[in-house]
Length: 210
Image 1 (cartoon, rainbow, N blue to C red):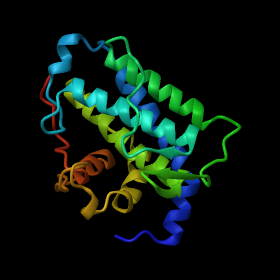
Image 2: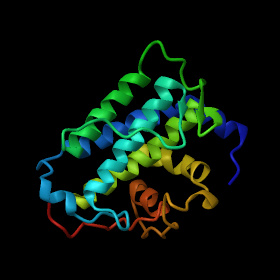
Image 3: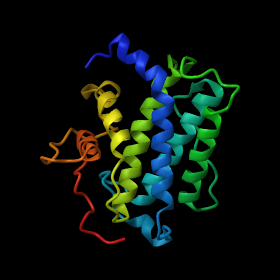
Image 4: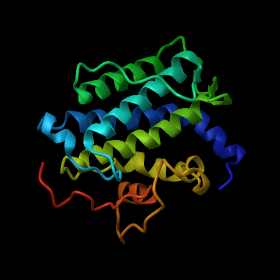
């Protein structure tokens, strides 16, 4: 699907709002009781081949890349590792999410219309933020389901991400990022449709206990 100028303009305007809502959902998921114990890091996740520890480290690295984009105006081909966490990956992701939101809200920033260079390619910061919102929201869902919780991506956030995800994650760009789209069961919530579009079974983990 080709991104129209109207779509691109909307993403430039609203990308940061999507990122803030996705980060809030991620923080809520990480802080939900009971605390993640070291033994939980070996749990399987909806991301094929990744346990919970690997998923949390990936989220931390993604947040570090977004922070680099916001604070420095560019993201390298090989972005920096996430924040030091003292051996606690949950604390690391939480700290990185808070740091990213603080950087985005910095009154000295230039907003979504600033240009960010990603691996040498310029694009608007709003589009980078919207892309980060998709990844952060879906991986927060992955974390919740890996922990056996039925948490869903909040409806208003999921509805908005459903509108932009086909533009940000087209079929030719999914390899290595997301699996092929799955058919969501009839009556699925917006969050269920979102994760199904990104290759996840909306029912994953529902029969488990945390």
